[in-house]
Amino acid sequence: MAFCLTELFHRQLYPSTDRTLALSQEEIGRLTGLSRQNTNRALRELADAGMVAMEYSAIHVIDLEGLRQFAHMGD
View 1 (spheres, rainbow, N blue to C red):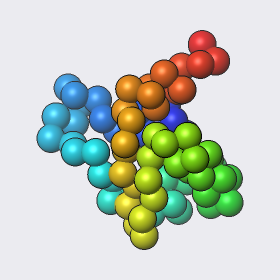
View 2 (view 1 turned 180 degrees about the vertical axis):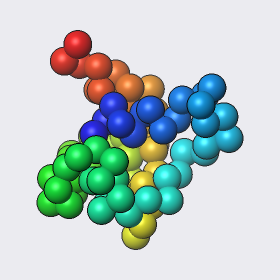
View 3 (view 1 turned 45 degrees about the vertical axis):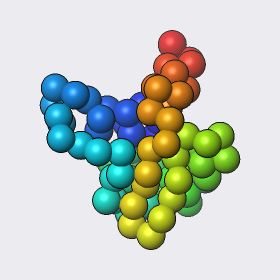
């Protein structure tokens, strides 16, 4: 989940992307291959860690660098 979110902020591929993704949890689930329930759980964990904030049909990335580090913890 974290890796997929960080890839949406690739400077060369998406240079004008701001820190808000206008995507629903269902859409993020489709992008990541997770069910809506698992997507919700993963996003809540990221929100509890202070990396993202969730709104209706939008995810705000608060700590992009922290999200990138989290995404690569298992590497």
